[in-house]
Amino acid sequence: MIAFVFKDWGQLDLSVSYNDLMKRGPALLLDHWMENGSRVVLWTSVRRDVSTNKDVLPDYFGLAAPGAEPERFSPWIFRELGGKAPTNPEFSPDFKHFFFSLVDTSQDGSYRQTIMHSKRMGNGWGKPQEAGFLKNDDYNMGEPFFSRDGKFLYFQSNRPPGKPIWNVKVFCSRVLEEGFSKPEYVPVADQDHGVFFPFPAKDGSLYFCSDLPDRIGRTDLYRAELDDRGHYSIVSNLGSLLNTEHIEWDPYLDPDEEMMLFVSGRPGGFGEVDIYLSRLTDEGHWGEPKNLGEPINSSLYDTAAKLSPEGRFLFFQRIIDEKEVLYWVDFEKYLVKHGL
Image 1 (cartoon, one colour):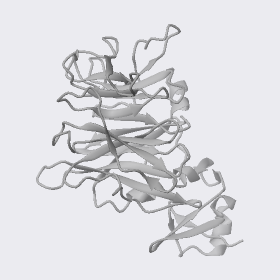
Image 2 (image 1 turned 180 degrees about the horizontal axis):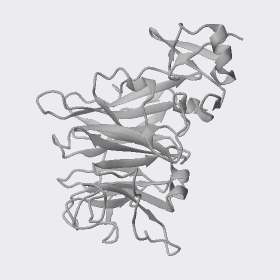
Image 3 (image 1 turned 90 degrees about the vertical axis):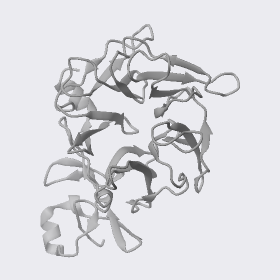
Image 4 (image 1 turned 180 degrees about the vertical axis):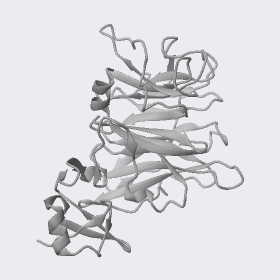
């Protein structure tokens, strides 16, 4: 077997000798290699880093698993983004695709957002590229979500019939054997209002946030159901227990769809907006929201909470020095530690 080691579980490090590698232990033995352009990407089948005693996760770019406290989510594929901020990470259920939003505010205060894509080939992840198959020049796109069965990719964009900058609409692309279909517009509410964070549930309904006319606060949480014709014409405000006169954003359901995560600016939080959870009651209603507490929440903006496909890890983003920074945490361990 040929042995390799790579820096930070991502990039080949030819400066490490074989003898040094052996001293580090079997967790750094790699049994697969592939080339991706000029970059050599290597991966490991070993699941434990003996130096830290943490799980090593091939599905997550070889990163060591976080524990009960949030850590920066910074895989090697984020290292050549030119200072732009990666947000909204989204893995396909089969871990063959990874998408994320890329935010650029570097040009005269303008706001540009696109979707990046990394494809898994063999045991390695490829260098991220702009998802050209989703792109519409001169318009933003972001917040990608796979359907639970992995057959569709939803996202929002201000391309027509939306309007720059914040009147975004929902679009959907079908996952094909080789690639993705051309995105199609998904009418939701079909009014002159933005539809953000379009999360697809198991039953085909879409959860989202918007400032529709029946809102309780500045922005509310909504659910859109399919009618008999397959159209999202049945739109319901999620009510005053979840929505307040303040901001509510980013609804997301866990894989069992018994817990909702969302963002709220209601009083009693730690910062401008915090991340909350609500559990489904025995009667089938969403229960009293609970603040996830520190250190997931902070004095800053903490938003866009979502779970990994198997439900183990919580991802969220925090605005630091006007730039979004991604974090992740073992969610079950966090809930237990903090009595949630």
